[in-house]
Image 1 (cartoon, helix red, strand yellow):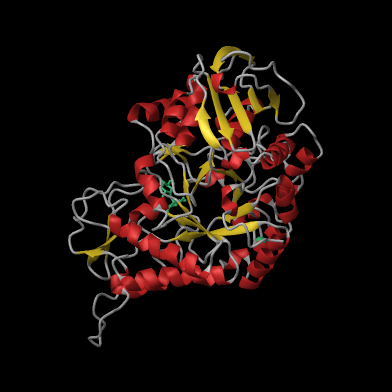
Image 2 (cartoon, protein in one colour; image 1 turned 135 degrees about the vertical axis):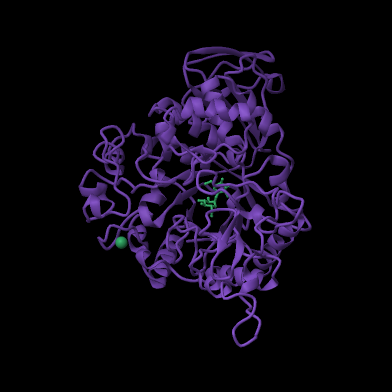
Length: 552
Ligand SMILES: OC[C@H]1O[C@H](O[C@H]2O[C@H](CO)[C@@H](O)[C@H](O)[C@H]2O)[C@H](O)[C@@H](O)[C@@H]1O
Ligand SMILES: [Ca+2]
């Protein structure tokens, strides 16, 4: 059962991101749904995750996979009913699993009744003011805010789109089918808070809040991270603190450390409990190809201190492209050359591939990056299917190639649905390397050496050593840049994590003078390494090897 304490459960949680639509189909119509997901809760519990993050489940025309919301307080009919959702949430809680949703704040779908009403213009035919007009951001010229970048660079040429009905332009930071809400209008803030309350009242454990930097526009700025945006987001936190203590707000702010840290607020004026650590993610991949981990250490050193209630969210992949917004131009060019040799792999400012295919399906590299993810400060978020090494489908448009059906077994449609593959929302992957005949949960559950079993064991080990979640981070100097070494320390234990990012065996000497006379023992307890006699500690590691050690 879910305990109401500790309120800061998210600090030690492992999260699992999934799309209800592509996880498990309960009624055989080819579309995943809440009843299907409910049947998979034991799988998720056994994997060892603590909290599920569900992609948007709202009614939507699905022009951005549900991030175009047409009704904030309902379930998309394909995914089931509100009653199905309640059953799912009850069953998740009964297993000790928490659940957060995705609150799409910045914009609605152009199909949302608010936008359709807004298009009637500022004044209604009877002369009364149209209250919905000011729910959105309008312009006569479409020339305002030229400092705001375009985010979906492959699709959009402007952040303004002309609307025939009003004869005006409306503002949108994402697709033109996603008009931005006008957060200068207090009624809009109230609507979003009411939507949040609706789900929190049903027992939801919180939200990942989408695209938070873009709520407010101001001339002469880039319209990101503005002080007025923070003021609004703090109202959301106040709502949670006052009425829903113990629930979580996680900010999706794809920004540099100096900007993202502002989304935590402060001890006395809090904003989000958690923020994604976007900048470290591409550097994990970059370090592998460069066989040089300097950039990981540099970006982690650049993270400012966060309030005591705060926690980072770390991840290797998610439902979007592997974003390259938080790297330099040179680094971006390097990443494209290294990880997206086929132009179809590129989209907007990123790479639309899954973890296993990015890493050439190399089990050692997959384990290495996961082991670093689980050991770095922050609560890790696993992306569904990556725990079994699913691949992607480049023939699907947009970012949908990384959103294919979960592969449960080798039966028709990979056990995702009793419908045929052609009837599935996205076709299940069937290629010989990543297809469901070869890569699926059932076969990996029967194989003690599978990636799935390895992942479950790592999560269990992480749980047994709280320093992984809460220990202080200290980098250990290594004379070999291919080898990343750091400690995580609590008053009770010190963990030493050493990882070889090179494709060959590497030797290094670590400066462990702070740990003189201690003996590194693998966290499983299976192997003792030589004691740290002197400050300089020599180590030889096989290619892509990693050690999780406890200093006794
Ligand atoms: O709702 C619109 C989009 O919001 C999120 O977008 C984020 O992903 C973008 C890349 O796909 C990224 O560049 C941007 O900084 C983020 O806000 C959401 O995760 C997307 O799926 C969605 O389309
Ligand atoms: Ca279904």
